[in-house]
Length: 244
Ligand SMILES: [Zn+2]
Image (tube, rainbow, N blue to C red; front, side, top):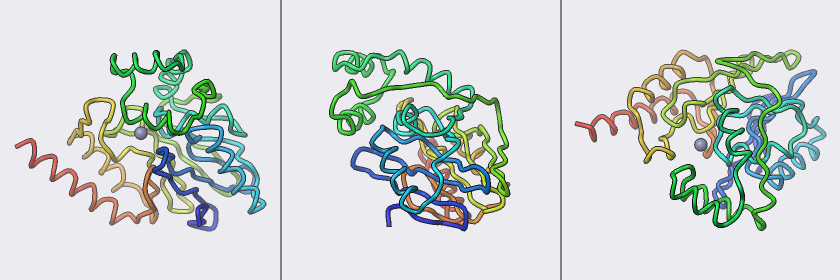
């Protein structure tokens, strides 16, 4: 199943490596529902919404963004519900909302380092016409963290230190013991694939302190707390060995 229920009130749409579509989450409160990440395009959002509708669930009232990267944000203009991003994410959304989407402008951004080859390649695969790309800032902006009551269910958004990007936000659902971490666990592709051991250690500690059973990462299948921490400890050891 592409759209999967992980707990009583949490679902997700599986990631798709074909055009680098990340996992999209769905958290169902008694009053409101919240989507995690906005996907990489209108088509991606439509696929998500059709899964929701098939199960007779309500379309998202809110959409929380885990970080600014295109695959998590370029569907923002097409979602139902208010989009929520942390301040640092929104700054970059504002910058990208002014980008031109011509072949020349895209090539130029690769030269200046504003964008990266991997994103460029996948954007061209996801979009038949580059003019279909629309980048918009968020409706609601928060600093550090934000708690939302969805009715019988709390969602906590928290900007954490992460090796992936400085705007990394985790979406934590304490009652369901689920956490969405976006790409916060991985390296920084926008800075020569730097994998900062200190930031990784900080992120591992964030996870250690959090009570959860299921972790949903941006581009892979759900794993449990022990598995994600073991995996990240191993990554940390590898970086340390390389830096010696
Ligand atoms: Zn990312």
